[in-house]
Length: 159
Image 1 (cartoon, rainbow, N blue to C red):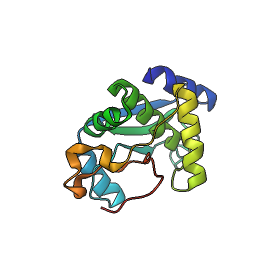
Image 2 (cartoon, helix red, strand yellow):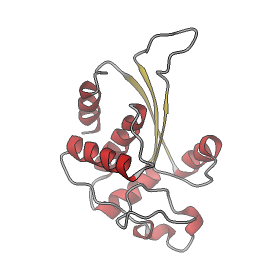
Image 3 (cartoon, rainbow, N blue to C red):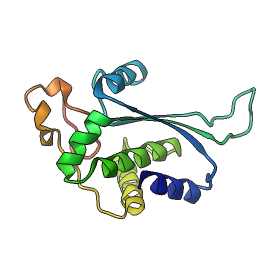
Image 4 (tube, rainbow, N blue to C red):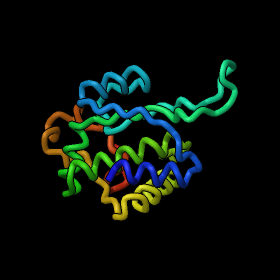
């Protein structure tokens, strides 16, 4: 499922031969990366880093699109909250990461909506948002609640 959706997205973006590095990790691993690269000391579901930017050594765009890192711990909790399989959640997170590599953003409401539309189209199903409180493991310790772009109320939450 994830590979098919990713291939379709890359073909639609005119990058059918793009290479992506995928790392599957746990909450501790992604929290370390999130703290190091984004200054956010908390786990998240997916991170991505583009690598296809031209450089003085290689002034042309390469087939190496970038890296996507997914927390399997967070993916499992989000899958339970959405009542779908871990494979479906990993597919969503992979597509989300690739969209970022292709230049999509979700910091603005308009950008987030555009990304959700692409994700729903590629996965062939509507995407329910999940709220931090949908993760019962972390309900008591708000410091450990994963960052989720898909909260039903469309609100950010404080950690």
